[in-house]
Length: 169
Ligand code: S3P
Image 1 (cartoon, helix red, strand yellow):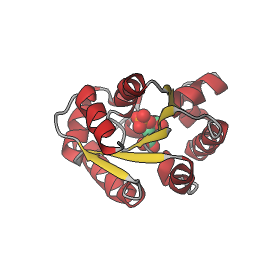
Image 2 (cartoon, helix red, strand yellow; image 1 turned 45 degrees about the vertical axis):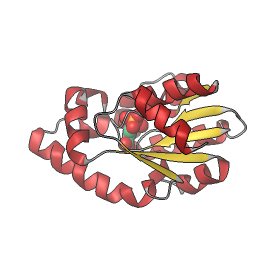
Image 3 (spheres, helix red, strand yellow; image 1 turned 60 degrees about the vertical axis):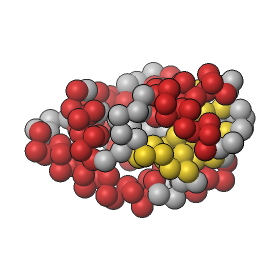
């Protein structure tokens, strides 16, 4: 079994992924962590020095490198399925699950650690709200091509992981 978690930044893919992998006795991968490990650079550094287009190529390579891994949960970076036709690559390789949150909830979650996300850097509250809402609208086209969708409100990673196990039974 190979499960891909997709969704916007701050939707909890990594924390849910870790819990889910443990629950189902699968390995866990996080595409951002893979990129940091292989390049030796932070995501921030890659965006700043090499640019977003290069980062998207690294995401594509990362997915290729994980292609032959089985029995795993992969938490994908928020933009990964929305570039280079990767949503289709994901859907060919395994089960895709979209962790869906409203842009208001995403804003609340992201506000706390915006400095960790290069795409949100330097934006004030109003700008960030608009950016999240616009980007989410744009990305919904890709996210909605996932095979399963979970709507998240105030659910804990454990609750979401449990809902996923029921969904894919
Ligand atoms: C991005 C999401 C981030 C990271 C990078 C770009 C995006 O991952 O890949 O900052 O384009 O939405 P998370 O979704 O894990 O925050």
